[in-house]
Image (cartoon, rainbow over all chains, first blue to last red; front, side):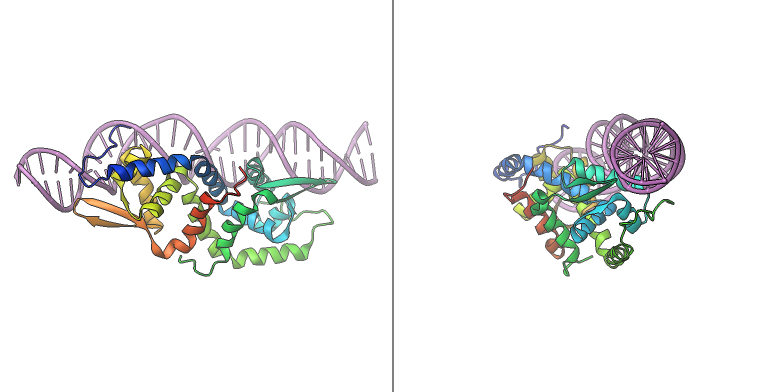
Length: 122
Length: 122
DNA sequence: TACGTATTTTAGCATTTGCTTAAATAGAAG
DNA sequence: CTTCTATTTAAGCAAATGCTAAAATACGTA
């Protein structure tokens, strides 16, 4: 936490200040988007989001069947997504359905679109 | 790893099969995009990517100054981004500059655009 | 009320992550 | 060739992650 501020001559103090203020101005979005990307940055959760976009709504049990994973593991992923309001739950009799939160589609759609982009240079 | 296949009647076997095959067909992109999102899903790395997009190229030292973080910590983040080819390094005298990999802009730009979207419902 | 299905929650644990500090490289310049 | 400057790498560690297994809820239904 000490050795910032480099000594090299080429360092452009003006540029550094500009960058600092632009980062500061975007602090909230940076935190929020990082959080969303982090949630989507897990293969299981990305699959869940993709499936919910495709099927509109699914229950834990369906997801467990499709992804061939433990119900509990899926449930814990759904909780994280719900905690951050990316998805919401509706209860119908004994079944709880999950769906993408409409308010977050502006953020989620561009992320999910990456899956269908041909120009993915892997 | 046992209790998948739910017993409930509403479960649509056809739908489950469809979902399974669509997931299987997208397995590679799902893995790759999850990996990229995971890299971008860290505030420090997201800031680095944002700054590189804005400034075209920066060295560890600049980033350390701007983000007010340990050079070593930044270096380790840069390594992760470089290992996944999201950025590349060019050496100029004693300084190593990093820049976004052009081949990955189709993936990176939509991600970074999320920062400037007004419709971020936080 | 007792049971069964659907789902969540808790606890435990191994793995991963991200930071700090210190040591190792590499190239310039004295 | 020794000394800066820039940067990476390695070691250590605390915190976070993601899974399993088991217990706890919730809600219909026999």
